[in-house]
View 1 (cartoon, rainbow, N blue to C red):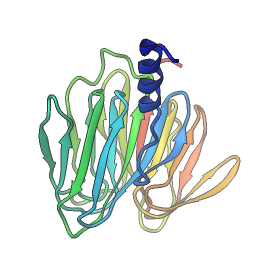
View 2 (cartoon, rainbow, N blue to C red):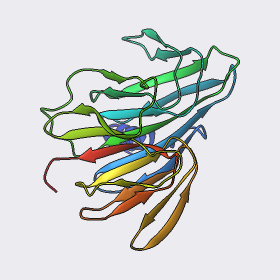
View 3 (cartoon, rainbow, N blue to C red):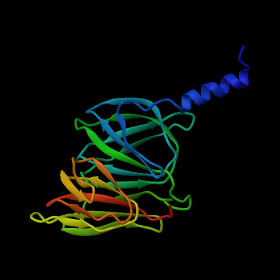
Length: 220
């Protein structure tokens, strides 16, 4: 017979290791980042599930409607995420969550969760939202920066490639279809695809490309 304390430990560990619903698909996992692609169908309900306590950058991949997030008792509360816009982002401080999801809209909701595994604990204490500039101007535009993290929006001119200048460790997130050119060759990216860029890598983007570049500025 298993002692009660051991049984509780086994039960708790099993709960902690429960996989996320199929709405969440891991597309990159390294020592710095966990990148999960998320899809909620129109009016879809996603049952209760857990998320890590890592600070997270959300990158929105489509124009969507409202989504309700219902947190589990005993401290139950609900929040409604407002409609999102393609290419916008939100930075959230770390907070372990257990919640269900209800898409309140006839539109799907597609986005990335970029979970920051090693960001310094003194960083990212407040929610920050990054809206899509209008009009979009070609060039590299810094839309968030602090000592540990920088987010740039890179927009290439419509007729010529542009350079994603060498930077610290960074993640490129494709907002539009594009091709990257690095020393190892070319990579075709669809919206929502990502590419991990190591330091001192010269990277060129195809004409009309739009990306977000999430740069990690803390030491390795």
